[in-house]
Length: 552
RNA sequence: GCGUGAGUAGCUCAGCUGGAUAGAGCAUCCCUCUCCUAAAGGGAAGGCCGCGGGUUCGAAUCCCGCCUCGCGCACCA
Image 1 (cartoon, rainbow, N blue to C red):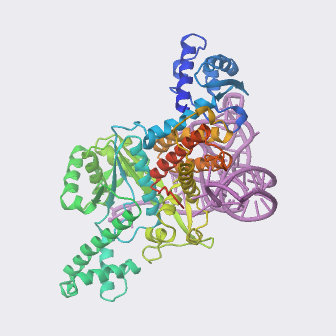
Image 2 (tube, rainbow, N blue to C red):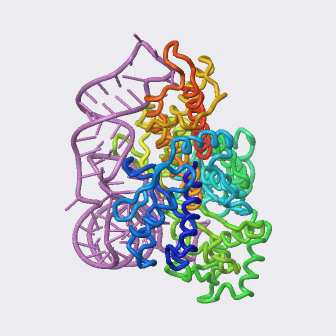
Image 3 (cartoon, chains in turn purple, red):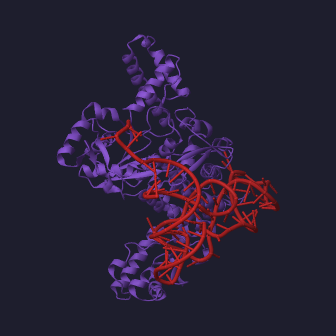
């Protein structure tokens, strides 16, 4: 029995009681689904619900009275061993070991499907993340989004959505010009221009441009600059794609801002918005009414000199996404861009869309710490820590896990020295080790002649088994919550909980019999639980883009 | 100043949208491998959940007001 099944059964008991007139309560006070939770204290049963307390006020009846009424009905649910009314009106439910144990079989029958749902099926979701300028390698903040964004994409897919991972390349405008000038200066052996970029990668790329086109410096100045721009962006772009790929993140669409300007999409769109009245004219410029969405001032879209402001590209880009049929466009931005929320929503509104189809997730900053002291990073000075640096120091699995297990609302500090030590400071080892252990147990079981030819759910009656089963059972709802709250860290945290209960179970319940003791159905049944745990850990690690090793 | 995120154990952080005695990892101190992976497990210690009000049967969680820190606040991109 999964907590979902129990929840459904309780809901139906509640509805029976209402239609039988045993409980009188306004319809809108009755939840669609009664929530059950795992009590912290084992004395409070396997599962508990506070539904009686929730209904007490709207029903105008003491909570314990409602609890007593429900308690009688709940006792009739198949697999429920006992129900107690406790405290102010909690219903504490104990489940038969046999009913709880069947979950192990259910998980193995569902295999990779366990933990997925069709809640978002039919939804087309565009997830835009990283989107770092091609003026340098991906820094830590972008790396965080690469890990979190890709994981969120996997989680959405697991809920049935059709997800497009998208990367927006800001390859247009002044920053790119500075990048090109910096490359050119380096190629000529001159110092970086004011406001330009420095760093080893600039000379590397300059060298590569020169190597591919040795005579390029002899051309006319404009042509040289243009060549360095185009060739440099292309090389930087390829490097970025490659390091993301090595990080396990591949985008479905790499969208070039330049293409919006080159094919005239921006100017066509702006003309349309002007005539449709979505923009207004003031002080010689055309404005977007972003104050409707909490901005402190409206934003200029067409400057008084007639040229397009940066935001014009954003609007055109959103229009492009909309034309591709997405139901939801999610933007994952760094905290330094949180001022963009209002204008992106305003952009949707200007195009006549529901602003709720635009959803902006803000990720707080990632700081680099050395010996407990924050290190200042600067892209222009070339003192950034990049995705490649991080992966080089700790590996893909540890990097992805470390970045994904925290809420994006928290600033995080990355201490490279610490992570380089490869201690179990990093919980990824804890979870991966649990998975590796399940496979080791499986191998030993096979050697000892323990197989899954029998399954006696009632044999899984040890307290650590009840705990492990409960956490495995909660996994699907954790994934569902991770999707609806857009919080992949919930999956990571739950895997840590599962790993912990697995390790405890391992210490008290043996799958392989000791010495020359005979193999019994208890051993066989435990193998089911062992394998079910492996399945859930593997499914969860898959959602995080972290490998599930068979040996460590 | 305005907006926004954070403030929970010595450290890093969870806390399932209001529940029962607030959790985990690391660090510290005890203990457990002649038998499945000790990268593990058990135990101890460690807390005015930033502060002050409010809402109610019940608040770390919701509301209001402060305090501290991060990040933003261009006809730049």
